[in-house]
Amino acid sequence: MEEKLRNPNTKVKWVEMSKGIDEVNIRILVDARVDSGNYRLMAERGFAALIDVYYDDMSSTRLLFDTGSSTPALVHNLKEMNLDISTVDMVILSHGHWDHVGGLMTMLKLIGKKVPVLLHPNAIAPKIYTPDEGEERDVGIENYFTVEELENAAEIITTTEPYEIGEGIWTTGEVPRTNDFEKLTGTLTKIHTFRDGVKVLDSLVDDLSLIFKLKDESVVLFTGCCHAGLVNTMNHATTITGTSNFIAVVGGLHLYDASKERLAMTVEYLKGHTLTTLSPCHCTGLRGQAALMYAFEGVFKEVGSGSLLKFKSK
Image (cartoon, rainbow, N blue to C red; front, side, top):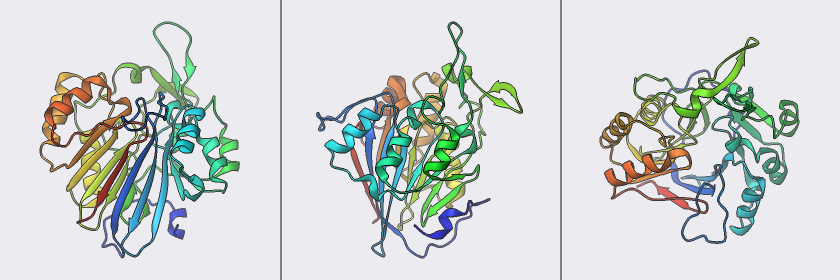
């Protein structure tokens, strides 16, 4: 990885790339369902993916995006798919919820070297779920590792801004929430954190996604949970990359309890883009899956544990 990886950006502006991305391969390691062609794999309530980026100068980068919730499922699937993660260059956490961070320490041990772990600073803050009935509980990192343990195991990069991982690869950083229909709903309105010692509603600003801009100017968006909303996230990615030429959206979209209005507005927005692949998974839910599958039958591709998606520059 290039040395600039170590220095968080305060602002990302698009500039001409010295090398271009030829291909992006996304392998779903764990998800709530298993890909139909991978019957030996395990599903879980969690999410993780391995991403390989290949450049036109023959160089490459391997990224681990999220680490699931159940170490047995993640380790099992890596073994079954014969994937070696010792070659991972960087780990990115989409946010700090248990189903995205649970396997982090195990994965760092399997990687076997001190790699950068990139996350929003709030991803390691307490995340207290307070139900209407029953005991509250931490749904963040508390049951998996401490901040000190993480600092000892990896090189931590925390930033609230978009971050350039390499040529043509960015995280979104905090996503501006500029519309009035992509709101936190359901259980997300019952998660709290602490700010200056005071318990407050967690607005989930730690939510981030990955953006890949191929050398033909096409863009692939890969999301973890997309708590800020897909429309907000794509608009922000357009600002970062300088283009709205999205060919693919893959990942969790948190539409399982979305209103009819939100689903309709999301579908309408996506129809303004020439997508070749739409693969929602994880927290998208049945409501979201059904709405998107019906509206985008030609490009909708169901994915799960073991799925491999390849995006090539023209």
